[in-house]
Image 1: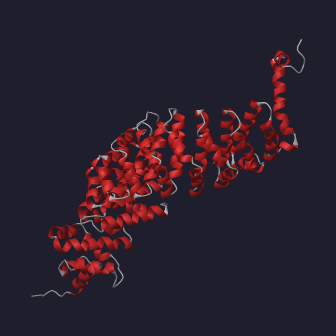
Image 2: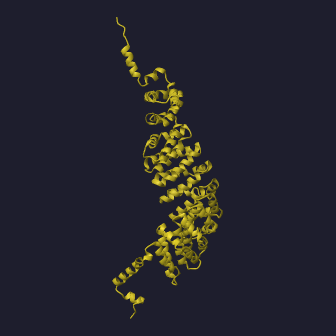
Length: 508
């Protein structure tokens, strides 16, 4: 007959008795004052890390990791409990299961803030984690890469510390391993290191990361594609040289296939990569145009909604900003109607602001560009957004600049005429300026301007004497006979009636 202390005795008890005892065992630590705070919990778990039974050590480390992962207060309690040095020391001594649990604790602590990440660095974690990147077990490598990525993502100083510890060449080796999960986190870590500065990105480039990342763009694993495209974007964004190195890895036209991916975040990251390349020079933008990138991005924008559209919208703006020819490429690819649709459909102000900015970049080059934008009837929408009190300040500023950029080049007067009735004086002066430039040289436009009521509206505008607006009004009036201008001036009908009253007909 098994005794009360044996496992066989415990398994022989009825299930309800075992459950009730198990419940009491679970709540027992919380009945003690020492465990009533995070520091009390840590004081109970810390000795278990040194237990003679390996399973208890591993379970205690896993429990610490889950606590630290929950919020920054518990993570701080792990740091203040002086637990990290013990974990770091054990990383080099214990088996792979413990190493994974210890790396999880370091990752959970380091993810919350730069200060907590610095605490993991200060306790010597980086050297031990880098050694783990060389471990035979892929799970240990993955756990170490996670921890390094969470430390590096906070700022350039922490990323530099990761680089100085020798992590980058080993992370590049990790992305060449067969395990998909390891590839994902290694690519993510390389992106987190690269994003802070050109120097850090160059460090990643110098060990040959670009070629290996570029080879994985078409990997069937969606999450891996997320990380690969993101890492390449972080490298390309810093400088022309780095962007050219990414392009030289022959990512075009391969990356354009990602714009048709079923996963929306693959689409977004692909658009982001193309945007980061396009923004640098006209030559890089022209390369993208030649590869069919503008049309592909426009199709991608049409197939998405919300923030997924944002990098594509900005990419079109960057391309159009470089030159007349590149802006015309956006127009020919039917980019303007799509940008106009984004401006009208999207509820978020930051997306509307990006669309307004992009439209301004397309329309600012020549009268032909401005006309193409104006024909989509987007100018009244931009004006409404500029005047709306519900629009964010950024949206108002970008809408105003877009209106100004387009109007100052627009000679298509029917698109400008509604502004005579609705625009505030600071916009109205640009509209009047365009009429004053076009009307002196176009007799048909002068006639239509009278018939549409535009000349009458010009006479109703109250401009300050000597202002630029008044000068433009005078220039417009000089295009017409004096009696026509008087006829459409406010109060002229009263003047005529007074003449009727004072007129004495001849009598026989």
